[in-house]
Length: 494
Image (cartoon, rainbow, N blue to C red):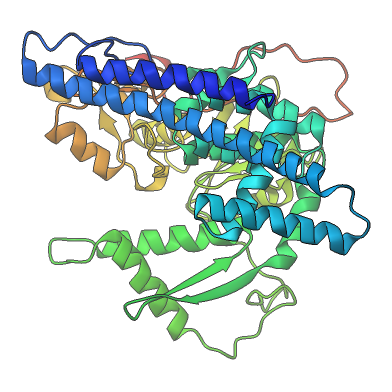
């Protein structure tokens, strides 16, 4: 073909496709999880061997899909460049727009997709081939899916070249010490990779999150979209603390209604409670200038009772830095929002201070001295969500559970506890899926019935920003969390 980049993609795809086809024909061979652990050959059981071969084939097909996506990206970018060269230099903005429309239309027809989809592909192809070489290389080698690559394009939007390169290097760079590699980017489901990439981006963005939040809050809105079967979507774009307070308040109410006589699911209960609350509200309530209900005594909107952990760097809580805090179930929030949550003192709100040396959790604010309650809070801080790979269920709905059952000799300590969501809690007790060992700072992984091991996602503790008043570096004591107040050292290790 003679097109730089495309030729290499074609060769890589042909080699991978031939290898994959040969593997499928063999039916058996090369089994093992993506994490590298190997299963046996089925122990002489042909049916087990065929089942394993199917799983291995699925894993191989993912790599082929990624290579096809890289091939498509190379072709789209190359076509855009060749079309521009054929059309020659543009002489006006209108001519440039017309030229772009022609390219988009041609690609849309060639792929049998909408012009909107074709335009998005061309934009993504341009970014990948000009600004994100590590992402394109990982896609072309099959180590990263197309969904992961699109996440990287989205999260580098608005960053300069240095910022985009730093974000890429954080997750894909070969020479960057990266604690997130305990679960590599390609082994995270795309939504979890987006969460990690966005969290890192918010902390390292050249523009303060305070300034970006101040601009974005002006875009708050309520949207209504009719749907089929007599249904419709109603969504609100709100500041994170209000959205989290609303969501968790409705969730807590729904949880109290669950019982043997209640036939509605948690999802249905949330929708019914939200509708009842919105329809029963008085339309004439006074609101403040920013669109929220007014507090008659102060004239301002009170922060909601955020029933979640808020991890606040010590210096940010003191107002010495603008480092983002972390709102459980959401991600980075402005330090000013975290300070407001602390000041409002929500009853079910737990503040987590982080160590100024390394960013690890330092202390959990709590109302009870009972060890089980403190351990439950510690599990929420350690895991952040259900530890099952790819699960997004946040900590409020999860259940503390012994990894090794109490009846089988298991102890009640941090290293023998997990916090699976109800669905994956049932999975553990009703199937052969088994959680693996945990530690003080690492949640348990899982072993499937076929013997494949899947790692859980780990929290990424980062050293906090130091205010200008602090002179000289403070020694780093490592990156693992300290044992929380209320959990005795012996209990944590048992």
